[in-house]
Length: 538
Ligand code: GLN
Figure 1 (cartoon, protein in one colour):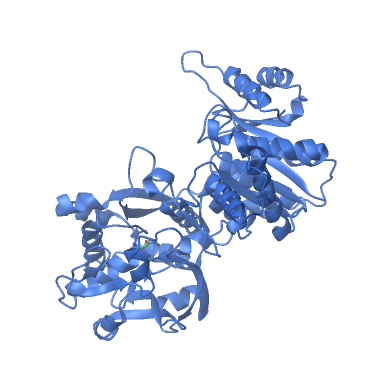
Figure 2: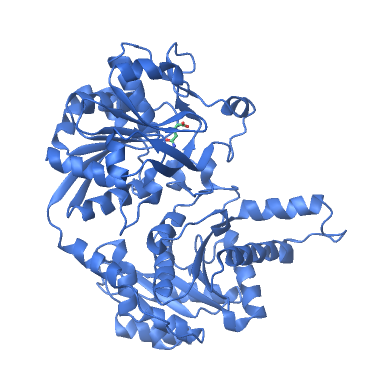
């Protein structure tokens, strides 16, 4: 049995389509079905790896090294299943494959057409993901909203699948009901138009998921139900909730899972969302706080939530575990360069995180923040770039190597304590930037005498990477002798993966991205340990 559910957006984007898709995966999984989630992104980029973080949001890295859309992070966090490149389709990948095949004469002299060859390739990829995951239900989220020119070929693929096997394919439109202040009531007209637009692509939605500030009024459900000829039980109310982890619970309250299964001729095999519901309830009752600062640089008019979403969620998971509600502060590292006095604000925090990043801008401010955290014994967690920053700061201040730097930030430094990885030199010279970093899961061995070992409670770990620069082993002895602990290395390549400051309550930098593996019910051990250190300081 293979069923496909397409999730399309109506009215506007950024209303939580990703969380809705992840939650639908979650509730169907909890009813005993094998599910897989796919994200289709409309951009021509092959992957998200080359898109500016403040533009695209976080680049989520898979075990296999795919640099994908942040929604794959939602899927992993909600279903606790690993996503790979099979779960992520972009317009760029589809065209690249079709053109490659054309060059290889695989179309046997036929002319290659946008329709049906492009939709056919989209269908092939969706089915490939289904096969590899052996999923019974595959949930496919289409980025953007109906009516956008670029989504049309994906809708066409979905329509073609439905035409072939009508009983196996359904459509859920995630819409939005605005409540204009002057009127004070929900309006359904934009949703009605979005339904019509979807109809014009040859698609009738099977469900309308109504995102709104508050629960959807019955009269509105009636109207929408009439407009799209659907029974009322298929118009689902999805109001704003306390946390994203409430979304699956709220869907269950609307009986959404069973209604979806029924529409596909299926029955629930079991019911198993108890632990999740308990978790989502528990976090509502937490009142005590923990104050954590993120010293970053990707700030713009959009919220920073998008750029650092996995970091934020990892902080959430670990804080909830300790019975705390995190109060996360956004600290722009460039501000510390302009006004070092401002660093004093770090004193009011229980701990700081310096997350991943690229390029020189703002890094001197991060180095100042690392110095302040080291000297004032404030818990510090460095993620990838944050680990490199921590090493540079230590080399400058403790070793007295005033110009210590990373070759990424100053190519001419006399003390490249962070240097270009050997295999990257050629790639950078040739400007081969797409999917060429050190990517995906790599093993590491932890020193038993470290904070990290206490956190993981084991020696052998595997974490996901995404970087071109690394700790320079030439400086290893000197740094170690002066109080920097090399807490983990990659045994095959002899790369330093974790550093810790010895004479400090909790100052840990990791070359990898632990944030991609934290789950609501299974917080990441390092984040747990970090928050615990923050609480001690408090
Ligand atoms: N820019 C650094 C590097 O490429 C750090 C990367 C990151 O933080 N993901 O090594």
